[in-house]
Length: 280
Image 1: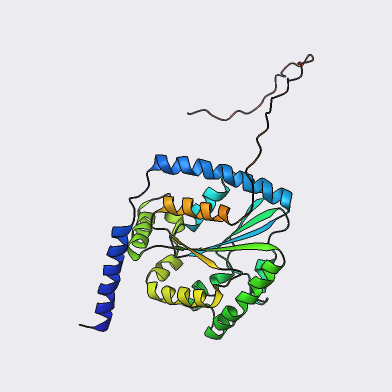
Image 2: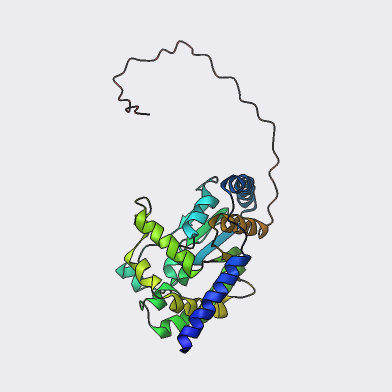
């Protein structure tokens, strides 16, 4: 038997064992019930961040289709965009390509009272840039050497840095990519880069392993999330994020709406206003 065939069979056996051990996919009703609770906790976290002047930076990395964007949406959908800010940087400009690599990320770091979430981050250099040949091997090695010191400087300045890696199985990634091909609501998510990346599964595995080995530190560890079940992954990630910060639940005050002022002679004017159609 060829060596590669043996490895492929071992991978399939391991994948089947993992799938057999995995719990059943979560039901929507249970998921939304738990998410409602966590959303309340995120609001409490938000108020603590503002009062404490905390600086929180959350990095999301992972396989294509692992669910980074969906997780970030669920984190931010019930909180203020003035406190929770999402950063998803496009391809660097010609000017940015001449800057120090970390330079364009630093300007997005949180100030006091902010939570900044990176939908992919400076770890592009260790992942997509390395695998797709957008950067040279010595530049990747230099990045992996410098990243721990860079992140130590972040944490010593008072930034709470949380790094999450979302992992999916090969079969689940295939299923999700195929669903994007066949769904007009998702086709925008499927880029030529996704297709190229799909064929390089093990190159990404090697890049991920090297990244973990070099940058999983005591001051900025990597947290791995099994994202084969998106619902469970989102709940688990949000729960973990909340556990990493010393916020306290909000004290709910009894609030009563004040009385509205009397009309004071106000009459609605007869203006030629343009109302939208009402087909629903």
